[in-house]
Length: 406
Image 1 (spheres, rainbow, N blue to C red):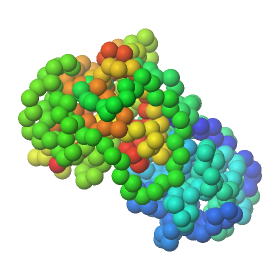
Image 2 (tube, one colour):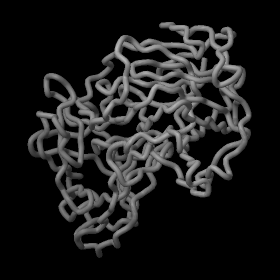
Image 3 (cartoon, rainbow, N blue to C red):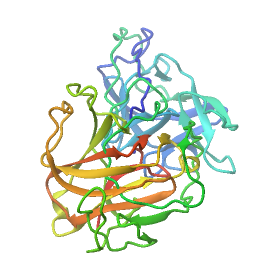
Image 4 (cartoon, one colour):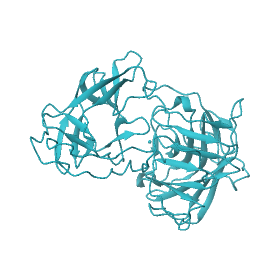
């Protein structure tokens, strides 16, 4: 689940033997090479070699792959892990050769990297994972299905839009921290004062359900380990007394991911950046998150939460962080769009809270009755010099802004 981005220059039909990009065909995958076996899936859509999972079914359409659950298959930045995410726009650039071999940008090379300590299961990537020792080269085959048998080559196309919640840009890691609006929630962080965290590409050897030691706080800086009373801050600087009960500050139970992530810039107020993978919160930029609240959330409570794990706990994401200020969270009066800029941004409807964010914490920003059936826009902006850029990602450990329901 950024100016994070997929390198998606697509060479759709590198050879005349590739399945045309405008054709659709469904198949199962088998890996061969350093790791072998059928390709299955975890419940969250991660594609795996090994592990005795039932073979997953995929469909190729116009150079993009979806799975049987209609999840878009993407190459998660920055590691290029091949997985299928609900609501994501699939990465383009895939094709199938005359013998049924899967190609990405014309190459049949994929990489399997150990996802378990006993090396019995492997995640799939298009590039080797840095600092991951147990990565081997593999090929993926459809067993002869969907081969074109000499169909004419397709024209090179532009990269598909990234997952619905964000749009990739050209970089592979977060750039130098930028400033952005943030709903600020005062928070504490143990011992050392973090002046700057330099982001490194995380190693995605996924080991299921590894729990991260986190401290959960309300916006009143009250630390709690289970949902605790919380009330939106009356202003970006003054916490109020708790009122109501916050929903979970982890991605369990009912929750919503953003379907649009749009940065806006004070320095370039007329520029519309479009939907992104990365969120940027700095002195120049703030980021707007759109959430489509389901109609069946009627009568329930919803919490806006901000999850900020330590860099070492991330598997498929990364961030840059500096400064000692706060993130200010606000709800906008109407929904933002891909064309929203600083000059066209909707006015603020209400201040939700502020947080002095520190890695290793989860924050309940505000809790209120769910706005069922509506699209809400939450803006995160910077205060007092904080700078944060991160790839919104719900894979372990989740990072970013979400709405949980209870």
